[in-house]
Amino acid sequence: MPKYLIERPIPGVGKMSADQLQAAARKSNEVLDGMAGRAQWIQSYVSDDTLMCVYIADDEDAVREHAETSGFLYDKLYQVHGIIDPTTGEG
Image (tube, rainbow, N blue to C red; front, side, top):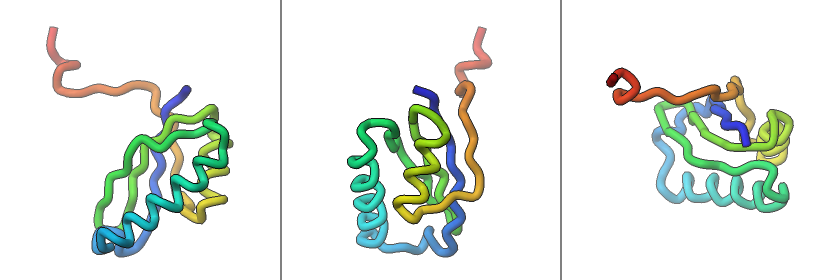
């Protein structure tokens, strides 16, 4: 399945409590459970006002459906075509 990176602007997300983040993750998981495996949340990075979320999904429509159903709308959606890291520069 393709991998996607989703940018979600959420003002103040970096100041959310552990309980608030747990509730958001629970909601996301509930929606994904109803999607019959068409999308899977890998992880999210929390910054001051943005969540950057990594998903694998059948297609962009599955990612959009999760966003709309969960209420966690996104600003930008990118398909990941590859991954590089420091070892990529090694011969």
